[in-house]
Length: 322
Image 1 (cartoon, one colour):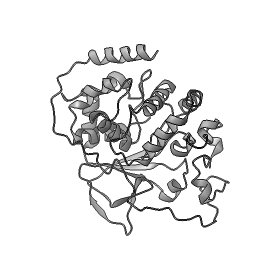
Image 2 (cartoon, rainbow, N blue to C red):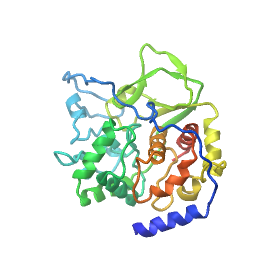
Image 3 (cartoon, rainbow, N blue to C red):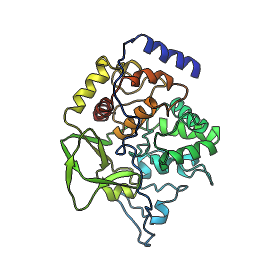
Image 4 (tube, rainbow, N blue to C red):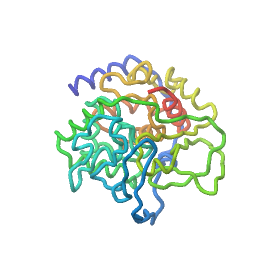
């Protein structure tokens, strides 16, 4: 099955042969996409006060909200019952998948949305993390290191159960894309960008600033509170041209990812996914840090992309309805 899927994808790309020029790009991972906590960062101690979020009658303490083996499920009727690998994991190293990716699979900027992805794809990515074929261009990334730790500890059956669960979940609008020349000043906290107080602004430049719509709810791991992504003016349209036409620098994304970029066979959807995540994956592929069964098919696709192209593509794909 895996081998035939690989041949099918290779045939699709072969049917879309283009001459891809080399462009100037940086091997350095952009810090706004690879958010790393400042040295010495520490979480405040549990003050013993029960926390609540809108629309839920549940309460959790700070200690419970930080439990990597006990997912804080604020909205249990919003999704099917979580299987053990998703809701609790297995100590000491197989972390609960739902802690990072959330019970509804929508994830956060520092990891990945899994809702609705093909189970075959999820299983393969876990295998690639386990073997070291897939890693981050930023070795200090705690979320990726957590993923590698879990992939190495989980059994094949646990991975299949978790993959089937996330594949069964519906996707939803999770990220609001806003084109703007200026953005809030931010810093890294909790492995993501958050607004700096007192509030100020700065030019966006060639960046995507993805941050919580409601920081408090996001910090409480509320699976119904999404994100806003500020992107450069004109980036969505430039990204559309790249994604749909290739613009002489790449292969049109629809060749493998489907006409509406909602996935095709074992190939993942791109529409509506975190732009920070998309930027990281394109950089990791271009820099040789993401490999594995199907990654080689992406190498020629990303080879001619500049850093600005990657920003534009991520802005466009994030703007699409999932």
